[in-house]
Length: 103
Image (spheres, rainbow, N blue to C red):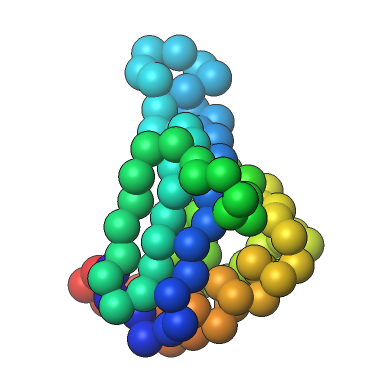
């Protein structure tokens, strides 16, 4: 992803509730996410970074621009430090997704 935002880095603890039902390991785990002109994701969480905890569903809603991080923190399975949530709101100023769009 390419975003026009100041560089932003955070740890992500992603939970995949489907993995609880067995049959596959899921896509959850701990990652370091770096957003900016070039964005990356790496395994593990770098020390000193703020951490976002989220279910796969809540993070997907954030990533696709369905809801802002601050709203998801109130209504969904997503939490993190207020400064990180505000920075994510600023970074993901995306138009609302519409049915029929090609992502």
